[in-house]
Length: 221
Image 1 (cartoon, rainbow, N blue to C red):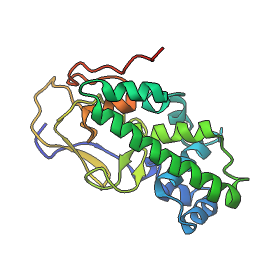
Image 2: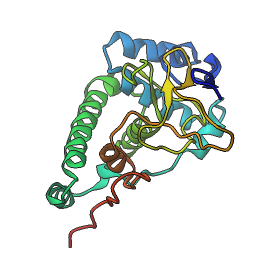
Image 3: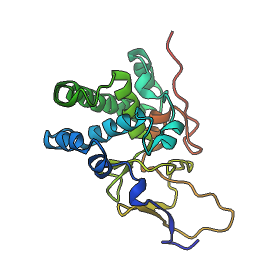
């Protein structure tokens, strides 16, 4: 494989994003959320939950393979978070965990204060539902910008390749991923998710192959 070649492309019909939400059967609901100024990432979270609970959804095969629970840093107690901060090499993981919790709190508050009063009969979810969709967004979504920023989208099965820091792939906001170097036959294709290993540890609770042998801190008794 030559440098610059397309590794995988994302057809328009296989992108769970705002366009898919607004063009769907309940598009008026999601357009209303946009008009209300609901956070773009929260709108995607709610769309994923909406499709997850719809047995006739086009996305059902993908929803069935998504994990039911992601046992990551969001589930650590305050005592465990404190122990993580004191563990050498885990300061960034701790700080990222705090940032994730702050973001999740903002999403949860906006859901309760804005979304539920406006369209609660259409998008009625529990706090556990919101946490699940937040974790799915964090661990599986692609940024719409070329650097991973911008509004997010989910693409079925695009999150299957293993992560390794400094992998030579580049994600594109035009719906494909290209190789940033030449590959030989038999060489594994791995994706750099654009996160530090500390971040991957925080998101998944597991180290990547080059994560300096860090492990998630054991629960504090």
